[in-house]
Length: 172
Image 1 (spheres, rainbow, N blue to C red):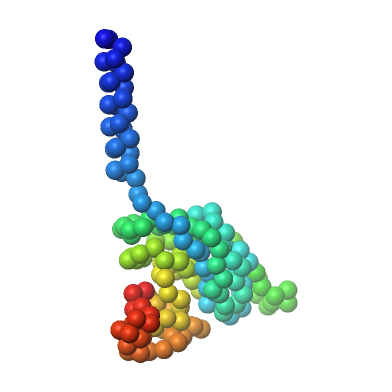
Image 2: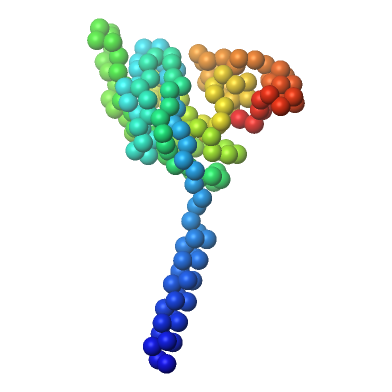
C-alpha cells in the first residue's frame, strides 16, 4: 500500500510538471531566411541569424533564401535576434574593408510568421522584417527610402483591388 501511494504521488507530480512546462512553452514556426543588401559598394560575404546562415548578397541585390530560422508564431514585445555578418568588396576598392559585425536586433511586430528578411544598409545599419511578402510588394512594411533600390511592382490601390478579387494580399 505504501509503494502505491508513493508511485501515485510520483505520477501526479510528473503530470503537473509536464502540464506547467507545456503551458509555458512558446509555440514556434520554422521560416525561411532572406537577405537584402542596400549598399552600392559592399557585399555581404556571409550572414547569420541566431546561428542560421543566410545567403551571400552582392551590392544592391538580394532575395535568395535559406532554411530555416525558428520564430515564435505570435510576436511578443522585446523579441530580438542576434545577427552576424562579414563584408566583402572588390580587390581594387579604394576604402578599407569594414570589420565583421554582430548585433542584437529587435524584430518588429508581425501578424504571422512569414520569411525573416534581413536588410543591410550603409553604416552597419540592419533591419529585420517578418513578412510573407517581398520588398516589391506595395504593402511591404518599409518606407520608400528604406526600400531603395527596390520599388513596389504596383500601387496600393491596384493591390487592394486585386485582393478583393482573390488574387493577392494586403497583409504584409
